[in-house]
Length: 311
Image (cartoon, rainbow, N blue to C red; front, side, top):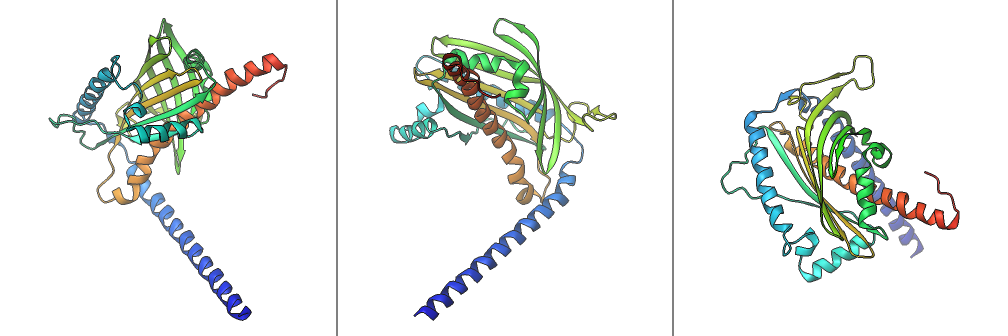
């Protein structure tokens, strides 16, 4: 019996080692193929006027739906539109600190939102910041001059260019590294709106997106907008904030436009390309949660107790 058990255990270890080796080999093959395919994907491409127009039509249709949601009888947060059972489950996950991200798609019955040689990415994400207030969450997000601290390493430069009331003009230098490194100089118009003492929303629209080559080097240069590698051509973000007295729910819906995937490479590059907007949104929301907790809740506690928190 002992010999049989020992033999079975040895066979099990051999099987596990074989499976692990095959998985490692498969990962290396996929990585090699990505390294081979990405240069072809990154070849310069122009944003077609038809794609830009189609994207703008998609944004118009999306904002029409949002107007209904922002009405007094509307569904302010996406989670509120779920069935009671699902809604309870999602609220529980959010209160446990999870970032919930879901893919969206705006229906276009006319077909006017076609984007030839370009892809629309549409995601919505939600977080819960326990113990925070609406004013604390808004204060941090409006502090654009310090977003390099809150959202590093993706935001490497940030600055408030102009500010009038609840309207902001903002500059970011963005860096995204996933096998290849992409650096973008971007400008935004951002507008905040208060619905009542516990609800607010904002919309952010990129007015300029410029790809930067050889960043932070003597030969750094910017490619003309729309005549680059097509990693990001358009970006519109819509935030909502709901204070329930115990914390703040923060929802961000992001719509972006990138180059399409070359024919024949969708099976390989498709998951890679589609994962970037989702991961970026997830990172932004998680960083927002952590920054609000640190900047307002931890520091407020330190002020009361005399404890000093490290930045």
